Image (tube, rainbow, N blue to C red; front, side, top):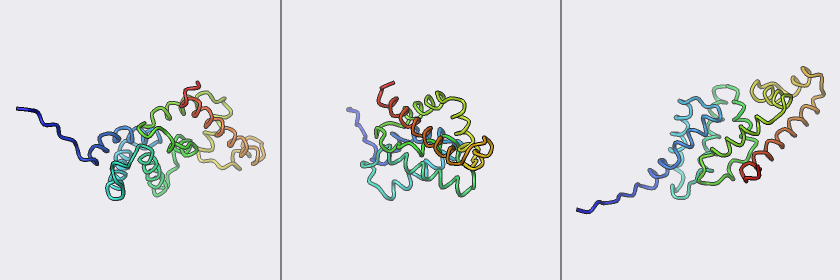
Length: 170
């Protein structure tokens, strides 16, 4: 008797290929395990009803998951976690379509750890603590425009650092 190879349906194969990576991506963005699980399920339901599974890649799934997580956080009136906000500044949608985002997250963590204490402190105040530029400026004795410029330069530096690491230049 010869063994029969069964090919899973395209949608089932899509879930098997991307579910774990998508869940890890959401956890890295600050979702609780339960939130990540629910968002992953929501994403696959949306994909099933709107897309051809053979045409769906990791980039689209991450984009849908991130958007759904942001919507959930907004509806619960919670502040987004700092990595979620940093990730929004990066263009994850251009990542290798078969990647689960792990290399991008690793690069982002490394780049964040290389920032000087002042830059990390400003990012923490703005993103993790949700303080406005005006509040940060007042606390530090700076002009609001100065804080805005510093945040812009820090985000640009993070973007360049992550891109260099992903391209293997570091």
